[in-house]
Image (cartoon, rainbow, N blue to C red; front, side, top):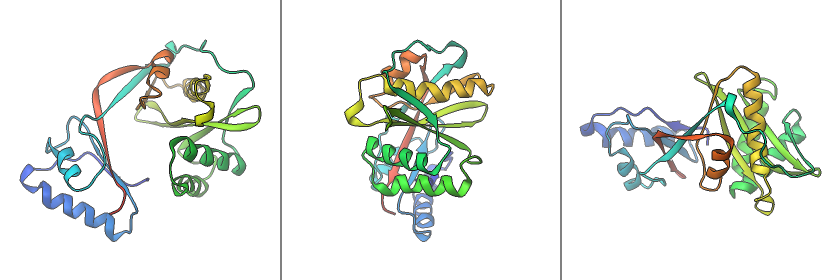
Length: 221
């Protein structure tokens, strides 16, 4: 899940051969899955259609990006009583994050384990991403992840257990990393919303941008 191809700029007449070459590269390294990302500058322009024909899962419409001015966040959003949001600082909290992440997104346990291994190898304090867990009366119920780069703060992996949705937990687990990023000196934040989370992000102050990003995944190379 940490593997991918992006910034594709290929001559149309060479695209098919280079797609074959890319698939072979990942296959030789025994990758169980990888993503191929597209954007408005991707060449050839029909790369998404070509990937779908090869068995990738994705949408040629792409996903909208959103941006927020961290100085103008709505910090008065309703959050449930008994909820605390903590940055992951122990292995126990990391396990909580991985368990809730996979349950929220209905993913195989292996994807949570991949995050665990990568974070332990990088070091809880040294990893380039910061993870957050929401605890409702002591039970882990939500996750988010802050990854900063290119001068902006990025929020990803926002998830809430299905049984706890609709209570304002998603808002709280998104807001905490944004406030931390603002304190670190960042001015803008970006994210890619799910359909479920779109209205939450709008209420916090995010606005959709014109560019769309395509995410095409090959589950087995």
